[in-house]
Amino acid sequence: MKKTVLLFISILLLGTTTVTNAQKDRALSNGFSIHLIGGLPSGNFGLEKDAHIDKKFKLNPLMGFQIGNRWYFTPGERFRAGLMVNWFDLTFAFKTTSTDSFDWSRYVADVAVLELGPVATFKIANNMAVDGYYNLRPSGFATMFVTNLFGEDESDTYSGGGISHAIGGAFRWNILSVGAEYVLGGIKCKNIDPESDDTSSKLLVNSVRIMVGVKF
Image (cartoon, rainbow, N blue to C red):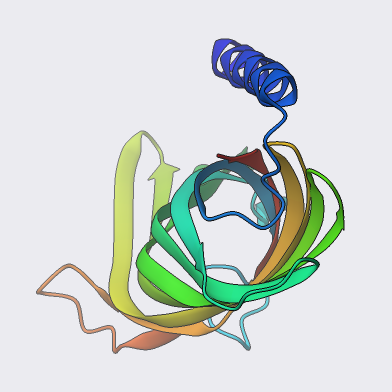
């Protein structure tokens, strides 16, 4: 993980230096982007809305990445609007804990493919801008519970697909982009065990995410 972070920072520094030397204004240009994601899942992330869970069982911070493009359609020297398309977005979180009688783990993954929506950008200065956007997120969602009682593992996995939403903003300087977004919605999931009697449940995807990356 440390090597990945160091490599990403090196790419950011190299890219920023290259863009600065090239003196190309990217504030209102079309482009490709890649972001690393870190964030805080809601207390009921991967659970039903009315579920109550003890603090020690709540998930660790989110981790993931996102790749996408944007295209601007409206002309303007200070402001432009366009379309943002994120081709692939993956985040996951987990928590492992132990009590006197058993070990317990929970894993949650959220995958969005071809998420899209409007983006609006205001140019502050050359190579400096702020973005605001909304994304409709076709999402695949899964959560897994694993317990170990007296040396025996038991697991239950729930998965499903649906639509979630993201609202966010970012500050950009040269190719560097730093932003935040709120993801919300519920995905209908079902136990993947065909012999299970569990009915389908709508599991929450609500989370606050910090995005750090580059836009070329």
